[in-house]
Image (tube, rainbow, N blue to C red; front, side, top):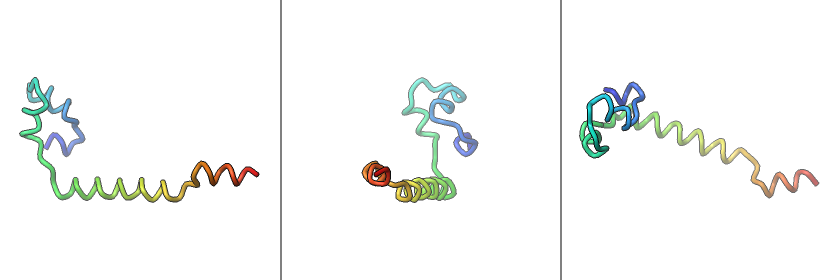
Length: 63
């Protein structure tokens, strides 16, 4: 649940008193909802990257 609140692995380690990320990862689980959020954000980033003209296109546009 800590992860659902936006906590990072480092945050989880501190909160749970773990000294290694391996120990913290044992208790860090993913949910279908979180996977959907990640997929949506990656999709948005990919779409924005496709909409931006490339450096070559910007150079052509300046001429």
